[in-house]
Image (cartoon, rainbow, N blue to C red; front, side):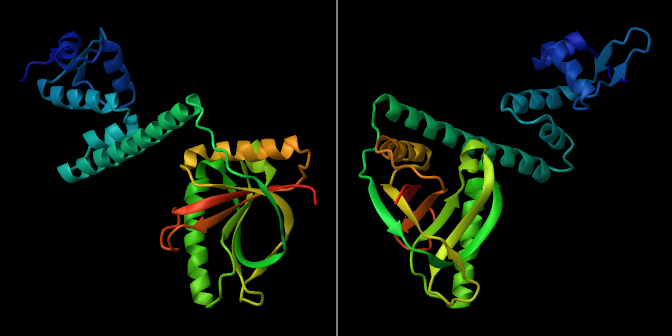
Length: 263
């Protein structure tokens, strides 16, 4: 019979503390080979050292316990590698977002604030293909991409003619509460099948071409201009998206932020 390792020896061989080993036992991630019924001491097989070392590395990469459990219990290398690859993809995206935030912070510290012109326009009521949905701030970007992909497909199928850029209407609750009913729309000729009216409004507008993470700075410039001139009005903010290339790349656009003002 293979000699069992005490929890102390196992800890030295794996760089996992006794506290960590007890926790991994409690959550069903790394079961001891034997527990003494009288003393409660835990013992491990030498063959478990490899699993323990793998667990330590995965946890150092902030892999959730449930995902680590799937790696350890994977029936074959392909299943194991799929779980690890999925986590590495998430880490890569987190690193990208962190780098964007760092770059944005540096721009703020260096006072690289946008200074575009603010204009006031009167937008008439239009006809549009639109989608209404309750959306939270966390899911807004994914919803935005999915919704405009669907609206563009609907436009092609309807054989309608676009009459303006894509847009979204953001009620104040979206900013204050983190969720609200958003309206995404594609302007089309009146009479287009499935089209609905989008009301007009008087708006202060500003164009923004920078990275998405700095869009709040454009909002700040526009908001300060409106407040300083005492022309702010109740109503939702709108965004319009002017394509820089074509409709194939939804994200390649200039954002026009539109703030309601008194007529």
